Image (cartoon, rainbow, N blue to C red):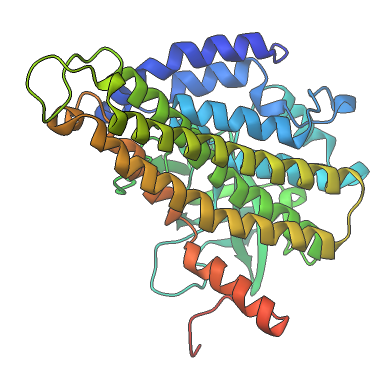
Length: 384
């Protein structure tokens, strides 16, 4: 693996961005693109310098995630679990196992597999002991990034105790299936992963985290990663709309040659897209900067909870802003803006998919409850 450089990253973005529409339309998974990112050290950006990583500020990592998502929204999204895994290592300080830093620096990629597609919230994925061997069996869904992974971080039951487990993705008992059936983010590999008697290193089984500060930190990182993808989509929606409008020689609804780029209504819509893209990016990076500063200064659980609330607020504001802009962009070109080969519809579909990932209304209601009563919901169904 080579050291990350901004120049190499910029060249990579310029190469992969033009193919995003075709890749999505053909459902061509991102194995080659992800391998290239891993090869030049993208996955080790937050690994401490003492362990061979770039040790960039959290704000800089999120700036790169926004840019990567502008090039390809799915390509930015697949890093969500990996980013959180590295932040969890950093949160352990000197207690973090060095073998994991070594793996990440070597270019290995960590996928994520927490949820299961079943009627109840109780986990079906379990650890079992076969003599001296610990094995994992179960089926996960919404396993973003796992189809590309070397390792998969997941939730399982050890007896009646919920634990976090990290297992190799290269064992014959691990199968990731590209069966994600959502109408957006089709290349994230967010489908099914099956584990059949996969050996587990006991050192890679961790009890449920009871550290409130770390819980707030990782919750913030997981959700801010999604908002960063939305900010990237806003930028690409703006870029694609400009590329569509500038060469056109007739404005919809008028006879003869009337340049759309000079039409006040078209200019208004493009201006709205510009506002959405700039605002979304600045909001994401401002919270990322505060979160990074808080971690570096050893902030306590209360401060990290405050920042997590700010992430909740972004989950309400940023998708709504970008969804509206992604709808309005079609006002610049009439029926010609609907062409499948342009793929302008993918911006709305992808944002709507991300906004449904962790329902925004639950987060916003939690903010209201806390403001009024000083308490948070227990995150369970009404009446449960």
